[in-house]
Each structure stands twice: as structure tokens, then as C-alpha cells.
Image (cartoon, rainbow, N blue to C red):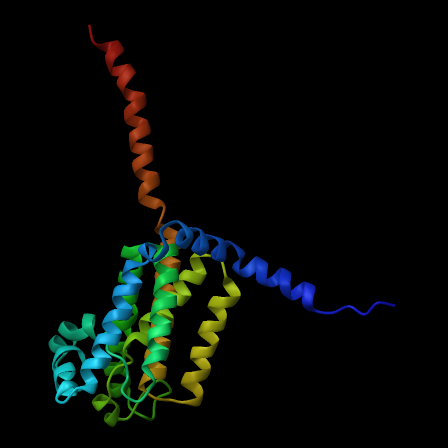
Amino acid sequence: MQRRTPAPYLRRAAAAEWEALWSTVCGRLAGKRLGAVPLALTATSLVLLFDLVQQLPGGVGLVERVGVVRGSQPLELSLLRTPLSLFVPALDLPVWGALAQVLVVFGIAEIVLGRRQTLCIAYAGTLAGTLYARLAVDLGPDSLFGLPASAALVRDSGPSAAVVALAICTAWRARAWCTGAAVAVVMAAEAAMLPNLAGLEHLAAVATAVLTAAVGELFGGYWPRVLALVRASADTARPTAGALTP
């Protein structure tokens, strides 16, 4: 009796999960090559630029003044720096990891979601983490989702919160449900095992991404349908109005 192996089932599951996404991304890259992902290339270059500046004498101070966000800062200053803080990599982690994440996830999102949505979702994920950092400090260490006051002095999560939000929204759009769920589960596990600022900011990015994707699913086609109905009504009314004209 021939023994069955899980390989065929795994191949079918992988095809169901990623085949449409893979064909879309490969088709766009085959046609335009790197010209298909200018936003991803720009974001990756900015991450690399900030990392290089941080290695220069006095560079850390310059990056701090331009793009570093902490919970101890005034809210207005944090909001002003948040767009650039998206591209400031962590000092204690290898930069190649951040570069790879930004290039791959931003690139796939740019192809699947479009440039404008990619930028908006990335900013929303980063902003959610920035704002939640303040809330977590206010809740305090005794709360399940709180942090000690010392967390207000820690840098925000940089590009990782944006990457998390984009990964979930892209998986949702591509109907890669297992992939999106896996990202959310990994972020929840990270926050449970390492209850620090970055982990909670990632959870805030997950929640923001799910909410954004759900709202887009429910209402994304609403206004186009309304406009189409208005145009159809106008087109129908024109002959009638002409027939009544003496």
C-alpha cells in the first residue's frame, strides 16, 4: 500500500494561498522591473540613508532631532516627526533586516494595493504605534497593555510597525488569509513573550491594519456604486427630457 505524504496537500494549500499574489507581483515586475516599485525603493533608500547618518560622528544626534519619536516628547513634535520616523531603523538591530522587510513588503504592497494606499497604510500603522506608546505609559505596568514610565524614553518601532500593517492589508486584499493570520499571531506572541514598547506598537499596527482593511472591504465600493447609479439615472433622464421639449 502506497504511503501518502503531506506534500501534495501542502502544495495545494500554498497555491491557494499565494498563487494569485505571486502571479500579480511577478507579472508587474516582469513588465516594469524595478520601475513597478518606486515607493519601495525610495523607502528602502531612506532607511539606509538614516542608518548611514547614524554611523557618522554626531549623526545620532542629527537623526534624533529629525526623525526619532519618543513618548516623552510633546505630542505636536511627535506628530511632526512621525512621517520620517517611519524610516529610522533601530540602533540595536541589524539594518539589513529592516532593509529587506521594507523592500519586500513595501514592494508587494505597492503592486497589490497601489502607491497611495501603501503610503497611507504605512503612515497609519506607524502613527497608531506612536499614539499607543503614550497610552501604554499612561496605563502603567499594572495594566495588561500598559508599560512602565521608562518606556516613554525609548525610541518608537521605526519601519517595523508600517511593515506589519502593510503585510496584513496586502494579505487581506490578496485573500491570503493564513498569511495575514500568521502575521497577527506572531505579533501577539512577540508582545506576550517580550512585553516591551515595540511589541505593543506592533499590536497597535495589527489592529489598525485589520480595521482599515475591514472598512475598505465594507465601504470601498460604496461611492463608486453611488456615482454609477447617478450617471445611469442621468443618462436615462436625458431622452425623456428631450421628448418633452416642444
